[in-house]
Length: 164
Image (cartoon, rainbow, N blue to C red):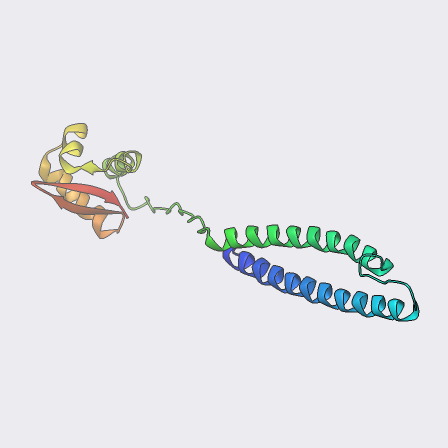
């Protein structure tokens, strides 16, 4: 599952759980209020307050529990939100090249271009490195371009050679 989809799912589930906690807390408050009013109604002649009601004391304990669960769910929701905003890492696939159709000189030039692909290789650098005439290097690069192994881009008065 993609991190973005997982994050959205976690956020939605967190929102639903927090909504359920609020609903549960409001029902608990209503029940406690009803129970306290029933107890106060049966105790005639004594002063009855919400603080002296035994159900109110139990309610305070359950509020702490609900608060802790709410914090944990909110924390998980934050993690889900973070996952929603993060971008998936792009995997760079290593392209496999078919070198069976190349002779030794063409393979050497290809390997030189592949080794220096981060910097880019100028056509003039290939001429100097392999001590070949410009025309021969140009023909070799034409063949590599036809086989869709390399690509030439014009840079000023020279070409930069890139792997496809």
